[in-house]
Amino acid sequence: MTGNVIIDAAILLGIVGLTAAIILYFVSKVFKVIEDPRIDEIAAVLPGANCGGCGYPGCRTLAEAIVKAGSIEGIFCPVGGEKTAQKIADILGISAASAEPKIAVIRCNGSCENAPAKSFYDSTLSCAFAHSLFAGESACAYGCLGCGDCAAACKFNAIYIDKLTKLPVIVEEACVACGICVTTCPRNIIELRNRGKNGKRVYVTCRNQEKGAWAKKNCNVACIGCGKCAKACQFEAITLTNNLAYIDYTKCKLCKKCVSECPTQAITAVNFPAPKKEKIEVSTTSEE
Image 1 (cartoon, rainbow, N blue to C red):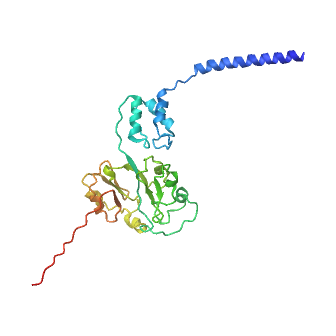
Image 2 (tube, rainbow, N blue to C red; image 1 turned 120 degrees about the vertical axis):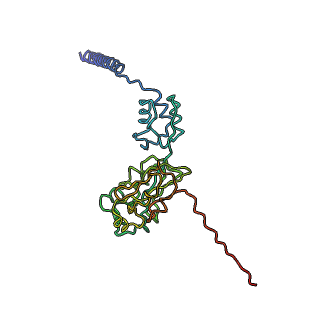
Image 3 (spheres, helix red, strand yellow; image 1 turned 180 degrees about the horizontal axis):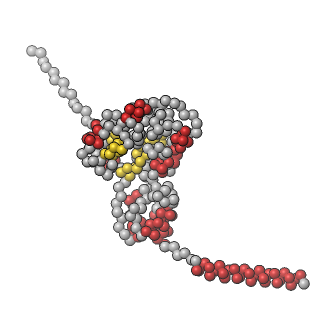
């Protein structure tokens, strides 16, 4: 009797298992998702950094978005650059539009010398935490806090905090313009800009929106919103908003007139040759 019960139970379980397998088989056929093989191909040529610089959470998601769009217009992998874009275009069978290479720039020059400390911060070494507490040691509510959140977030060792100035420094040859540092900074002092011809760039190294006297009180090189740079620019590349000048890199012709016009040296010119020193001729006269 007991043996029959065991056999019946085994048969019943077998029937249930077989029925479930048949159901699952047909369900998988009905709901089967056929994935475009180009997704794997594109994912294979992407760098696999999963940095989010393209605006997507990972390289696989980016590959899916590209295949779905059937184009790379408006979609760019900053780590892979032009070479990767060309490979993706070849897979899709389209032409790749060239994109201007970019780099992160630090829009603050409030070093220990330019913006002396008015207080001392002794707490969690985090820019995000310090930003929620106070204006900063220099008392500038718009300046760099120097705790290094940007450097910690960078996956390419392209940024570090200078021990003397307590300001971030971009390693140009390592920066891939992924934008992680930009989104990490609570003060929004990091910006992605065009690398420029031969690496030449001109930009305002200040984010302070206070009126001139207050901005200058906390930092010697703060933008005071005087507008002299905008008046000097012949290409309408400089605008003045909320007491702060901004240089549009798409319009800037790198003439550097604004640099010499700025009374507080709040405009920085990068990778330009050093000005030539004038030779002083010393004439000697022989006594007769």
